[in-house]
Length: 434
Ligand SMILES: *Cc1c(COP(=O)(O)O)cnc(C)c1O
Image 1 (cartoon, rainbow, N blue to C red):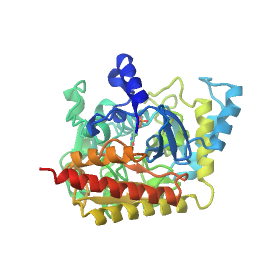
Image 2 (image 1 turned 60 degrees about the vertical axis):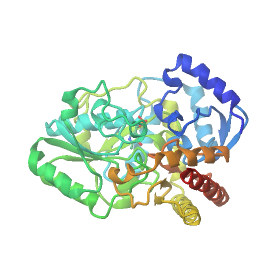
Image 3 (image 1 turned 180 degrees about the vertical axis):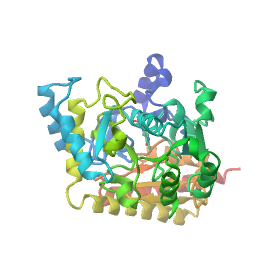
Image 4 (image 1 turned 180 degrees about the horizontal axis):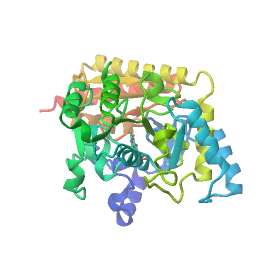
């Protein structure tokens, strides 16, 4: 596959954009090649600037759950463009999206729209601190909650990919208020609360981890977090920026039946536009300014174009049968991945839940960051480059999910499985090298 134009674009980008990319997860440095520059996309297909066609299993990191270029989202956006692109003032579109979220998501009475997942989680932490009058909070190793200072500690996703242990620029004081626990280890959390539970404002968790690769919660883990929070008067925050409107219409709260005090959304909620949201019951949400003292703001928050796009996306996801289809596609993906692993006899395992999956280059099972960190990332790099050459886009890191959309047909997923088998054979050859 020829990537000449992408290479030229990357050289040009590196001159004027730090590192050549506007988010580190887009760099392909850890898989040993240059990033592909996209030209256009439709359904589950992407074309790069050299004219190469790919089947896309990144989906803009989740938002493209309906596929690229969904006609209903495009129509909603086009209609709004003529009415106004940005108001910085209240408008009906933001009420409609908020009503939709309150209708769909369990335990939510009110919302506040922001422009990214990062802002949503940052606001949730501030709100939890303001509400409880406590400073500390608990997060889990390998979970990623955006790039605000206090949440960058032991974070997954790009932080894990680049092997950055603690980010320079985050002060020691900030680090001291963030307590890190192992995922799926309720005993460790109980111990932390028995030591300083009266100082802990919140637990923030990806209810299904997606940023250290996919790691589902074990039975009892989320229920245990719920109990601990209730017992100690801390808030349980579900960061549903990936899982929201993906693992079920009502997200992980609906799918797993555990109630959070606050939840955060992003990605899918904007239909491809930059939208985040923090949501919860009125008694907590009321603490946000202007009603309450916890300040939060945003010039472009509730942007009418983004709200209309998000509303169109959620309305479409509400149609009957959508989540059965996503479930089927996710299970088929896991099946073809496991088949490829079995055929090649490689040390690898597959985690999958709903339309999310990860192929881990370790024997497994993988249940937390300790397990994830055993993965052979060199093997992943060989696999990644082979998939790219074969016309499949996957996230350029072991520590990310495969994102399936409604636009992927069974044939697309089976073709993906065949490509994985070829890629794993390349990994076997690579591992057998002298
Ligand atoms: C992507 C992500 C975020 C950050 O969202 P941005 O829009 O990239 O700021 C936060 N939490 C989780 C779980 C995510 O996957």
